[in-house]
Image 1 (spheres, rainbow, N blue to C red):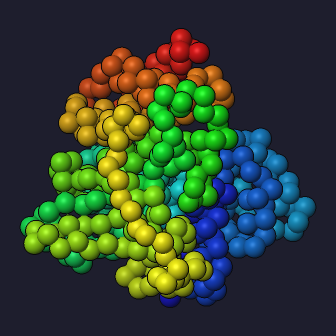
Image 2: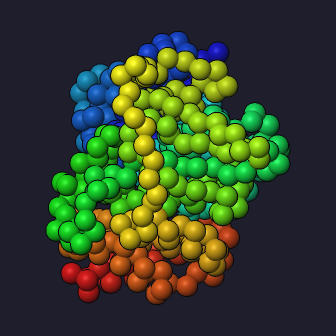
Image 3: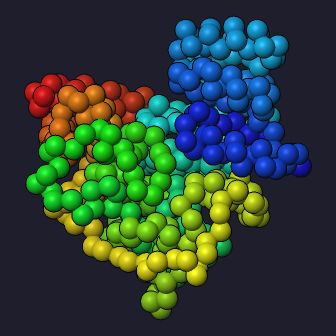
Amino acid sequence: MTQRITVLGSTGSIGTNTLDVVARHPGRYEVFALSAATQVDLLLAQCAQFRPRYAVMASPEHARQLAEKLKANGLATEVLHAQDALETIASHDEVDAVMAAIVGAAGLAPCLAAARAGKRLLLANKEALVVGGAFFMAAVREGGATLLPIDSEHSAIFQSLPDDPATWAARVERIVLTASGGPFRTRAPASLSTVTPDEACAHPNWVMGRKISVDSATMMNKALEVIEARWLFDLAPERIDVVIHPQSVIHSMVQYRDTSVVAQLGTPDMRVPIAYGLAWPERIASGAAPLDFTRLAGLTFEEADAVRFPGLHLSWQALSAAPGTTAVLNAANEVAVAAFLEQRIRFDQIHALNLATLEAVQPSNPDSLPALLALDAQTRAVAQELARRFG
């Protein structure tokens, strides 16, 4: 049967790769709705190719521009821009699967809507779990949703685990997330104060958006992935490890009780985990190039250096702190990265700003979406004021 899909964040890297995989399988998938923040022309082109019923823009002005261009091109896609438009296209009765690829806390509400509506939820939005945590996982259980991780590392873990989640705790000793180390893996920590935004965004292995590229350079992306893994796989934080693997061929590993290690390997191409999530439990062609083992150089591993990557270690600290601390860490980091990209603070001040914000904001166990969003807003306000002082 044709699977009807909503793609949240269709003009970003994950969104465009999702549509690339979908286009390779005509008849298997139908695009029901697309959403974007500001890229009107790209969303217009996607609407022309996939003919979704709905398209959502983040602002009324961008929605107006898109609607005018759709009409001028004879396209019938309806444009939505109400506050709850994302939730509408994520939970619509006719939607089977939702690709959640909106970056930031803005993706939390539509992810919750999809979870509560019992959708197949392809999760590429870290913040749903980093901010939502136990609250979000409860919505998944109560709604009967199927939660499938799309981050390459979490998809690799999922592919390496036993089929029955009820056996994970008894059979698994630990999981090991791999990290490329980003563009500054071998650079002297003392020299990082002069890093430019373009240097931080030049990832050696992956093509990603600017925010996640900076997170990769600081290893904050891996800190967020540790938090995600704790909730996705229901493992205690001390059973989650991180190792530097510069080649990005082994995407992550599971170590079992008998010390056997099962790993997922592949070329660094996000279409692989996307295709796995779209077709699970089947497998379909992703468009990625296969590994050629005869051409592989050596696969190497290094310790995740706490001096070079201090942000990584905030994950375990936040998970052991008061509930809501991981939401504070996420919001602080979004503000810090934006300030760096706008050249208001230095690269090496991102971690300092995150630490200062964690010290300034004390969460009080947020247990609802309004409470989580209020904590997020409070944290951003504090972090913005601190950023002004840093600058």
